[in-house]
Amino acid sequence: MLNYFAVKHPDDLRGIIASGQFAFNTRVVKYLLNCDGRSFAAFAERYTENFLSELYDCAIGNEYHLFDSYLDNIRWLEARLGY
Image (cartoon, rainbow, N blue to C red):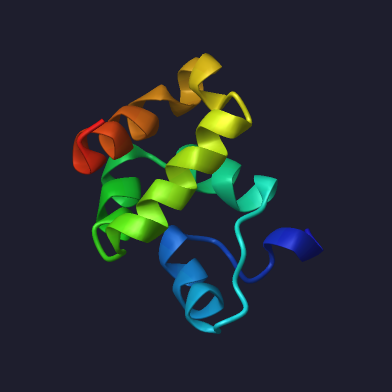
């Protein structure tokens, strides 16, 4: 409960990301990839290609492309990044 107390929607991550001390971790990557497609796209469209590329690299590095539940958002990233 404590881990998700402040994050109930992807937009809740914006302040954390903007803090200047943000670093991707497994929990954040899984949380974002598990969002419904509309929420994920609305969140991701606000970020730079470098940010999205790092998110994508983390997803692939953790083999999340092997999980059906994450595939739609990974494919969205691939399309956006031109992969």
